[in-house]
Amino acid sequence: MSGAITWFAYGALLATPFGAEPIWWRPWLQIQAISRIYDIEGGALAGVRRSDLFRNLSAYGIVAMAPVLPGAAAAIVRGSSLERQVALFWLFLVAVLHLTPYKEVRYFAFLALLNAMLPQ
Image (tube, rainbow, N blue to C red; front, top):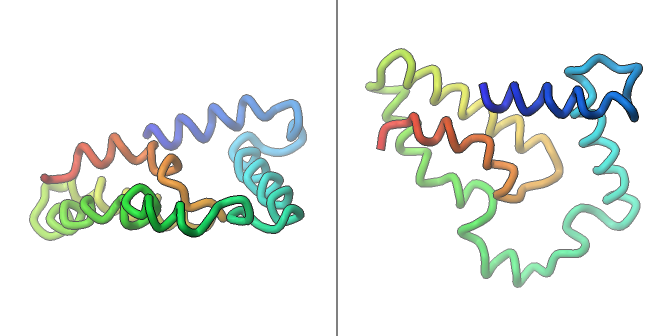
């Protein structure tokens, strides 16, 4: 729910640059526009030193989310109906996030509420 609210709030705020587009499509258009800017400058990771990524490995991408995976698996196997739905939706949203060119941990922040609902 938090992801949907955030998505539609961004859609409403992007009415000026993307007013002719449907509200649910505007955030995706914004992501694509930012991606094109980074591509012109050499890609999203052009300004990031690889040594910094390695040093902060625990704060990026799937490594940061790895502790949640056992909880998601437990919810799917032996959780309640709500826990199972939360786990499946969490996995779906992680897949959607990986379609974007950015793999920073801050983009996982909207999953925090779902993380809290998974079994510990």
